[in-house]
Amino acid sequence: MRTAPLLLGTAAAGAAALARRVVRFRPVGDPVPPADASGLDADAAAARLGELIRIPTVSSPDPGQVDAAAFARFRDRLAELYPHTHRVLEREVLDGGALLWRWRSGTDRPPLVLMAHHDVVPVTGQAWTRDPFSGAVEDGFVHGRGAVDDKGSLVAVLEAVESLAAAGHTPARDVYVSSSNDEEVLGAGAQQAVQVFRDRGIEPWAVVDEGGAVVTGVFPGVPGQIAVVGLAEKGLLDVDLVTSDPGGHASSPTPDGAPARLARAILRLDAAPFPARLDDVVLGMVDAAGRHASGAYRALFANARALRPLLATALARASREANALVRTTVAVTELEGSSARNVLATRARAHLNIRIALGETVQSTVERLRRVVGDPSVEVRVLSGTDPSPVSRTDNEAYAALGAAVRAVYPEAAVAPYLMVQASDARHFAQISDSVYRFMPFDLSRGELDALHAADERISVAALHRGAVFFRHLIRTL
Image (cartoon, rainbow, N blue to C red; front, top):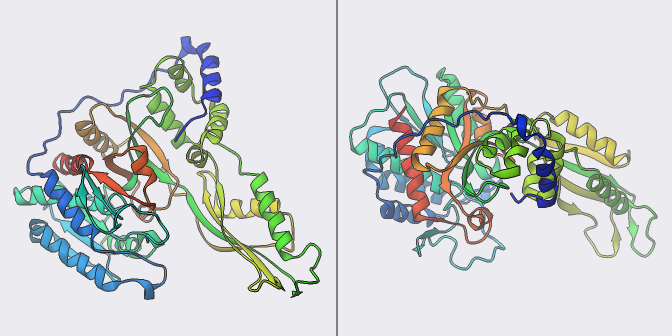
């Protein structure tokens, strides 16, 4: 997330006048002893991740395009790679292939749920510099599709569980590991796991899934690491814009035909983006990161609440990633017209993929789309939609434990809340827990983040190891 230096610099200068009444930042938490990494082998974990990457568990919205044998082979290999986990924990294979392990504690305390899906997105059309399913461990990195998203997280969790199970550890509360097989296509695996919890009357103490990470250089005036922990995620809405005409031969075009009306509707939406607003989660991120800022930036961030509109504008103009944090976004992802070069389109269609900001709903978003399009001949057809998730708590034992585990592995990192702009399996668990956190405990570079869902996905062996140390510490200190 790059920032707009001019806008933020101007805001910082204005905030200097407020410096005498700078808000006192809340403490970020007491220092904690370094995490114990005994029983963890970084190179062995990297080799196991590489082996799992070589099994191409590519999901698809079309069940006929899914290699069911690859998913079965993946499940079998997990049992072979992590024997102590499968000896101590109870494993269920849910309908369709999602996995759910339970590590019994012998107590009735609400459980911890650790999540990581094992399906991956396709590699078709991407310019990889090596085989995307090689799982090669070279130059200190594990390479291949799923290295970060999300087999890396699953391996980090299982490395932690395996080491503790081998040592005879019993957790202070039950620990569940949930791994869906269809997260990338918004499938049913996680929903099935949630239904299992509902049927058994279980309300998790905390849920940890993919999301934010430990990043550097993404926030102005903060040179060090920031561990961004997702407290919520934006809603998801899929809409078709559809308009039609009688059609005919292209030699006699219709004035203001269906493609022209559709194009005009798209341009209206592009010219009238949703308003930029700084919600409480993003404001909390600014506040937490600001504790580690210097100079005028510290004064700016300390007064973020008073400067909310200015900061929202600055972030909206800073980069596409920052813009996505402060407003509902509309992306045109598909266009469809005539099926022949010399035939007028009888139907023109555009697909809109929309991510709904906190404070807005599917209904309010659709109403605004219709107002902006302003053409009754262009139908706004809703295909599917979910409202933004609830915002998870930060005033409880679970969030404190998560922050302590971060500081045990990354002692210099600021821990900051974060709004996840993508959709994840975690949104389903928000139905049964008020403490759902979206965080991958890996320190990732800008290049590694950019490679998610793109060519040359990779994770460093050291970051994978630190992720396993994080989960081990979290389980041991429940």
